[in-house]
Length: 321
Image (cartoon, rainbow, N blue to C red; front, side, top):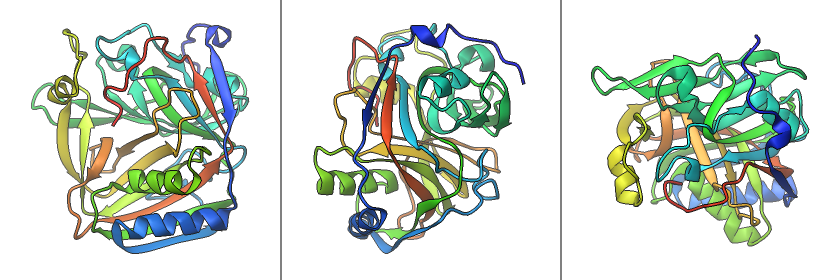
């Protein structure tokens, strides 16, 4: 596939920092304890990564290992108070900028309004090659159906993104990963924030990053989908929540996720998860709505470093949950 090129990647500012990478078994115990404070049934094990191209995972590469790194591109300040629609990125360029020209990228972000025709949620799930070609693209977008206000999910064949993207980039190889299974939520935290806070509690200001995929196999979740760009400034959380469209969506949902326990001074979004499904619904994951019946099953890997691409000069914390 040949795709339209954005501005040269050389003009994008890039910062990077190494992350703390504790022993896998130690992290597994930390996650086990943290999740047990929020879920009734918890199992965290270090296993050999299965083939994640298979259902229900449907990733664009068989694994999430091989030089794994988190990448935070653009950011919410390019969306609020008013959108900067000139902020478009190319995932093949991003892969080169972070030193993995043949990377597999998965995570959460905004799709290109120029490609889709409207603002939308993007679920990046693409393996690029060293040049401009795409080896495999199973990216989806979710947008608001203008006819009835429902979620409209579509395959997204482009690698152009909107103004904010958070991904795990890796070589897409299989290796040692965390297999995480939980059922029945007993606390107030969602699945991702529970893991992030457990890592933060244990490791403090030593940043630990993870990324991967999980499936909500039973139960439902609260999602949002961004509607058309706001024409008036959104300056408060209430403004943002009134603008967003919220939905309760049943599983199965395949969720692509990244998180970091502590921001090492790069103005990062500390966790971000988007999901897609075979039943035509997806979006930005907030939390499950069926605590008694919810079931999560996921695979995560530790990230070795974090890259910050095109960090906004004027920043804020609005709209990052």
